[in-house]
Image (cartoon, rainbow, N blue to C red; front, side):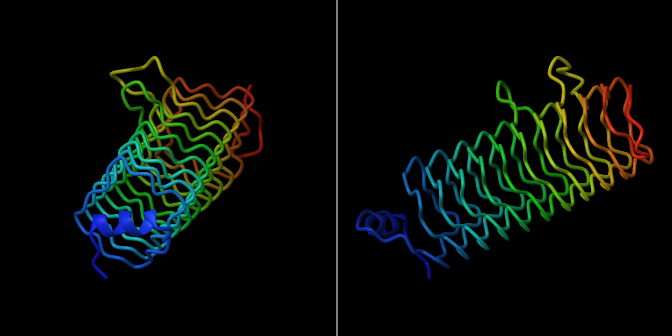
Length: 239
């Protein structure tokens, strides 16, 4: 069912929260407060949803390909099985969000707050989590278990206690940037148990007390990385 923004806002004002399966292609919802709304299965391709509040909402199974969600609040929302390919969530508020089994190929999360976000089983090839201007992408305690993250870019992100167990990070970037080497990728106490980090670049990264037990480090670059107390793939502890 195709619907206009005026209809959504009017029905929401009168207490309606169920908008499952609607079509709102190439539409625009800017600076609106629509928290706790249900857009599961909706079609939001190429929409502009910037600076709106969708916290505690349900977007499960929705198509948000190429959508622009700059600064949008989706904290504690359900985005499981969503299609976010080529979407832009730079500087978005996504703490506690559920992205389990989502498609986030080439999706931008630069400068977003993703504390305790669940990325388990996502397809995130070439996803972008880099530092954005004065905003550092915060992935503290984020979960990436069994995720496909090849070629993803985590340069200068904060990944304290992030969980990458079983994930595939081949040829991913977890290094400092050449044009700004003052902020280091922080992977303190992160877990990479049985992960594939082959040919990944950890140049200058902070890996203090990280757990790399059973990880595939074929061709992995650790130049200038800080590995004090890290558990290496063979179970030895780095000095």
